[in-house]
Image (cartoon, rainbow, N blue to C red; front, side, top):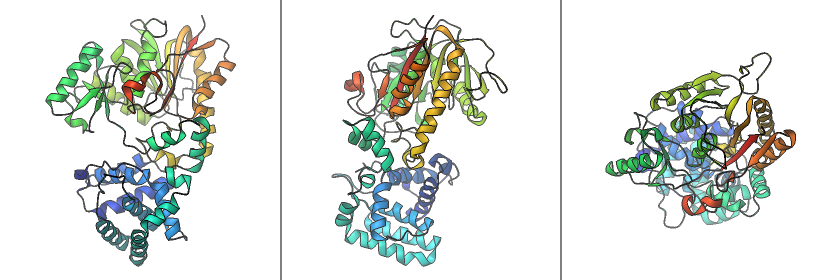
Length: 461
């Protein structure tokens, strides 16, 4: 079961209007479009409610699809099917002690009205399916959950891969993916030393009536909000005093620039590459922690606009360049031949570790994507390694829990590169899972962290 924690004020537009938007979003995700793209095109007054309900539906999509298949074995036209499964998700039983967002009557009434607007002839069919579900709900829910895809609300190939990679934790991982993630902030360390800045900003949040708590020593700049907040309500956000960033993502910059595992901190002016920089959260964090000669590289010129916006808000500077990080020589080369003191490679990946923040990811990905992404990651590692100075460090990051994109990827790289070695730091490197038993961080972070993989790689002198 997924928890229901949607803020009701976000759902003030009539449910009928919202459900038409949600059905379109679900249909788009099923056809391979990201929810972020769909929401960008949603009318502004409907966007908050559409996002909240779409997240909710996508966290229950496996269950809703299985129920629809039992109720109507012949798949309806896509627009009606997406409306039906969205309605069935809203009618799905809540966890004990959790109140439904809408009464059953309201859901049926408003969804039938939405169907009438969309395809008038379908209204009777939609009404009959939903009313049968309500009459036979307990039996249909039980029958639907005989399928793992319905019980865990992930595609079967995804379930199989998580079970193979994490045989002791696979069910807990899948269940955690259906929970609402915390909103976590990163306090700007340039507003004072890290500890003082974090404590001072926590006091500002308290004064503003925003409840929060420090994450702990794992991520000293991180504050976890008790409830999500609009960034416009965060004190000093526009001035760059704080940013929104998951605690796990905040581990990257210190691994690159700070004194860790016997390595000295990078000196002022160190030459650093952020190889896949957009949207710029880690780029900005690097510059909050150290004065660097930083190149922020990304293959998408449009996304670099977001990087520059982040840097401008925080009052820090970096060179930005649109290029494929793999193209270090030949036509289209971006590298000038000067080696870097450190490299951050936040590689393209499946995003399997941030599914609770992006519930559409599991439905967008295909099993074949993992091998293709792993091949790109290997190409990036091999291309960037020669650009690193002897004695320099490369931090390899993916927001993935799949071992093919983490420990298996790095193991293969180490077999190819005789001058590379890996430094292990308990609780900071390796696979981090969005679970309470997250290595050394367990006692302080619980489920604060998203799922990430970190490797700290050193080039021999």
